[in-house]
Image (cartoon, rainbow, N blue to C red; front, side):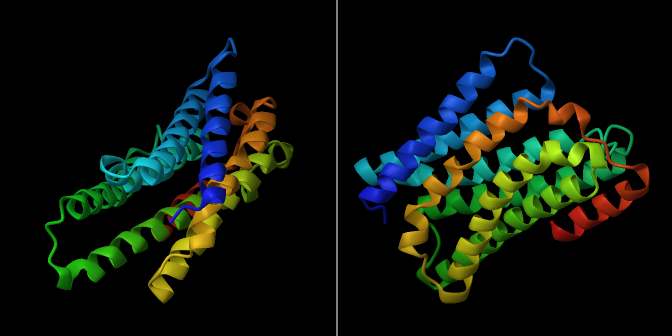
Length: 241
């Protein structure tokens, strides 16, 4: 499905996220949140590379494209959880932590299982539309969960912290909203948009400078959500997932 424009946009995405990870790794002090950000950047770099290799060489690379996308989305969700861990008091609320981890783990495991089953070609032709629809719905669920987390991160943050998380929220919201739009159109019309697919790499790489600038402001250490809205935030996330 990739055109020359698509190959270029995904190649640029691989370079951009690789550069983001490299810059963050050169910093002397590394917090747990910054390590999650580095991991998400590296996974996104691998995803973009796999897409380029799948289009250029086919074969086994094509089998890895969908699992790589699943891991890319999961990595950004995990990063957001790391940012929200303190404000959601997940260390204290073990029941809520278990519920969130179970929901996310189920969706990611389901996507990886569907990727594996599809790659092995063991699904009868009659059941392939159902398999494809299930995968699309699970991808939509991941995008919605990401948007809900970003909304809670920004809206429920203390006023002093909102300016520092704005760039993070704008960048990642664009990524999740684009994914949601892409898979919603597939769900409604049955076929993926070639144009939307080709520029996904370019859309994702826009996040790189926003993350780089916002990470300089140490927003992760200064995100605080009032205790009165913690329960509301967790409830909203669980309903979305």
